[in-house]
Length: 360
Ligand SMILES: [Zn+2]
Image 1 (cartoon, protein in one colour):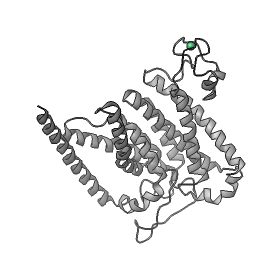
Image 2 (cartoon, rainbow, N blue to C red):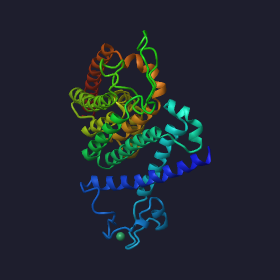
Image 3 (tube, rainbow, N blue to C red):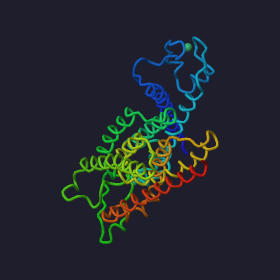
């Protein structure tokens, strides 16, 4: 890795840790329903304001050994851990999007030499910023979900609005703005749609008359993501509740996927929902060892799954493309999934009843 790239990584890490510092403030204040912007940072114990030099991410904590300069009360090491994690997250996005070009953007491949010299094209910076923004919102939402088992609307609605703006002005195939792909005769098997900052457009081939309306298509990709994120998860929640007799998912989870949909479109929402079972299963087992059988938040699993789905889209998309652009097939699969979920959840209800009777 060249020196200019290493310098960028340092800058990105510092920026990420500053964002992490703000994430801490948001989580701490949103769960207690206080203003995020006013008043400034202060010690929770003596209420005196914290000077800017003591508030520098990570370093401020290390120099004061995690204590308030004025009253000596210890701050939780969690604050520093989140700042560090946020910094690492930003570096990871920079490495994946810019240095290793995981989504396979043409503009990055074409400018490989310039990027090595530290000259990152502005369209690639925009892509990085939009993804880092979404990850910061996901981190905030996951932390409030872990703390209070709820995701405040303040996070998800703000994130959704910002997502719509990013998606509209960075419509697919951004950052490869001049790339035009025409569907061939054997569409939707070929050609393979390339990945953009929004993985895929809302629909392809485009609706007639919309081919040149880049911003309208970007807005529609985002809007479809919002609708699917909100309703898809609410339908699943309702169906599961109907079969099982208890609620399995919070409404905050649907809001979280609405935000993901606003940034990344409806296809990511559906795939990452199904893949969220994997982290949820791991968290479920960990929870079982730590606290016994108890409800645990689904938000972090959804967040992890969405990010992994986006960065693995290049590999997943070849299997998904034939399914995702056939309306009849999608409709059939959707109905099948709902019926399947109803049967599974009803079976769970019967199983639980049987177990209860055994105990009695
Ligand atoms: Zn204090």
